[in-house]
Image 1 (cartoon, rainbow, N blue to C red):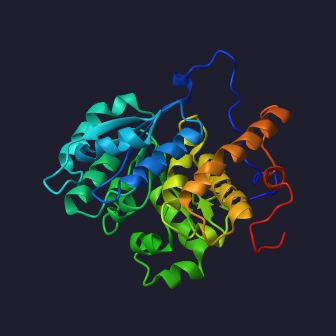
Image 2 (cartoon, helix red, strand yellow):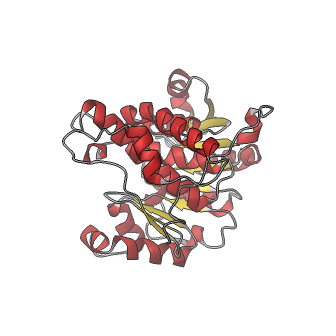
Image 3 (cartoon, rainbow, N blue to C red):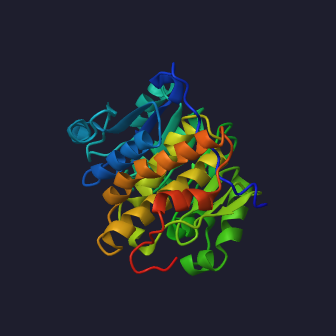
Length: 318
């Protein structure tokens, strides 16, 4: 990509007379016993990215968790199996309610029960809307990629290298890491998806265009970070950004929020909640630059300089 095309898409500039319905409705389908926090993190991140409305759909026995944790986001209790996970009945409920939502995020904390895997595959096959797939949503596709075929709307996949290995059938994670860009690009092209291959220098590609993200730090190698990224991308998609641009901007903002958090508290103690807390500051600067540029694309280095103010994550050099 050219230097100009690597510039970040501007955030949508909001008119004075807008209302929440103008910025879309995200449904996060997530959660299983012991992993309810993942969906809450993704839902909160979608809100912080600017989605007008966000609903968290999770097993009905976990709904109180959402009600206590989410505040202004809503919840959708879904039918659960005897084991307390989502299955085909939950998929049917989501499909019945699908017209209410503009973007779906599937996967955070869903677990790997076979009935859950089948439900994810059905949703991907039948939902007629953009979908962001992470974590156990990706695990549900390992060995059966048929649900990706023929999707008319955007599909954004956010694997870490181990999940990429499972999706591609590579012999090992080392094989993925040896050619991160090529692996992600080939998979995206073959399956018509946007791939966000996470890790140091996250790769974002639609099979033709490729962007290597330069933000982020080793302190982000901890649980929940991917849930935040999933929510950010879904929230940006919900506002009408092109899927590739939403993925690029989400990865950039996610990493930069992590860098800002690390500059304040170091890398060792960094947790996903710290990154989520720094997201609004990143988007504030992105908003300001969008307004100053009258809606034109922003220079990543200008955004980074504005957010960090000369700081670097602890222990790093500029």
